[in-house]
Amino acid sequence: MRIAIIGAGIVGATAAYQLSKNSEVELVVYDDGLGQATKAAAGIICPWLSQRRNKDWYRLTARGASYYPELMAQLEADGVTQLPYEQVGALVFKKTPELLEKLEKIAADRRKEEPRIGELTKIEVEDISSYVPGWNGTHGAIHCSGGGRVDGKLLVEQQLYLAQQNGASIKQEKVNLTRDEEGKVVVKTTSGLEEFDKIIVASGAWVKELIEPLGYYVDVRPQKGQLIELELQTTEATDDWPVCMLHGEIDILPFEDGKIIVGATHENDQGFDLTDNQELQQKMYEEACEVFPPLKEAKWLGSRIGTRAYTSDFLPFFGNIPGEETLFVASGLGSSGLTSGVWIGALLAQLSAGDTPLFNVDSYTPGNYIQKII
Ligand SMILES: Cc1cc2nc3c(=O)[nH]c(=O)nc-3n(C[C@H](O)[C@H](O)[C@H](O)COP(=O)(O)OP(=O)(O)OC[C@H]3O[C@@H](n4cnc5c(N)ncnc54)[C@H](O)[C@@H]3O)c2cc1C
Image (cartoon, rainbow, N blue to C red):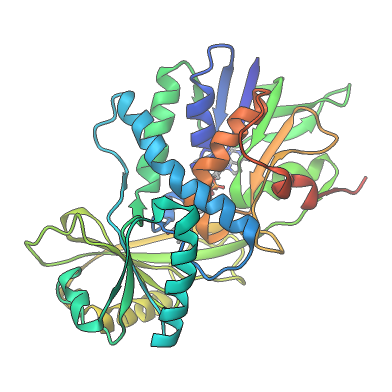
């Protein structure tokens, strides 16, 4: 069976890695390598303490988070030594002690169903610095030991490398979709039309460009996200510091060797723009310095900018497009797409190969967001 994947962000790369293990599949991955959200993402994997009430969103992101250790075991078995995901724990802050208490109750309830949350511990404000030396915030937090962080760019690279080792062909080019004379959907490449048995469109915020010319309306809009990368002037190992999820818009993520990520913005009026807005970046930096003063001495390494995809009800969609037997799609992953994206990619691999997944996918059908117009 010939399968094409268009887009190699977290969804496309994970689907590629899984499908490449199937010896009956001949796989081609197309990606134009432009500004993908995955490369820009911060990397927080901790959906359990979100106050978002949508059950479908929670079920999907919680499964995504719990899939990370399984995926890491697969990578390790395939020889990867530098794993991109670390379960370092997360500190989740709230504006008031009442809100923190409410969150603690929600999390304790969720833990009954989801043991991957790990231990939940209330941390008083004066004790936060024992987790993140130099912290000077004014709020306590809940520590969630199951929280983690991932380097999205590295995870994509590793999965594509392994897919290639397994025989997949990876092509760096922008492609389009069109119909042949019989009405079958085919991939329009720089060297001509390519026919496949199945096509997976994992093109993130660019899904409209690919699907709409086939006669559909797609309910997805772009959102710009900027974050900044800093390097702490410290000799302390920062590898196992927890991810800090503040109560405002920004989060602070420590990585190895003193690298700290601060972000991100959520800009709904900038389309696909990928340029720096220094004013917004400075604002995030100052906010972060207030709670974590060592950042004032940190070296500014640069910024990362990406485009998230949103649907009008903020739920992702994935699966087969009704009425288009060969066409599979995923988009609308929003600001938690690194968390849900690995599981969505794995499910798309199963669905496109004709397998029935052990996960109810009904709530995420593309038919809710893609309507035929001609
Ligand atoms: C600043 C920022 C911070 C974030 N932080 C987090 C976080 O901490 N935790 C979390 O869970 N999520 C986070 N996210 C969200 C997450 O990054 C995204 O939801 C997720 O990466 C989307 O993955 P994707 O595979 O759907 O799309 P993408 O990663 O955007 O990949 C789509 C790919 O398709 C390619 N493509 C598109 N059209 C074509 C075409 N015609 N031909 C060939 N290739 C094409 C694009 O170039 C791109 O490479 C963040 C996002 C941003 C922007």
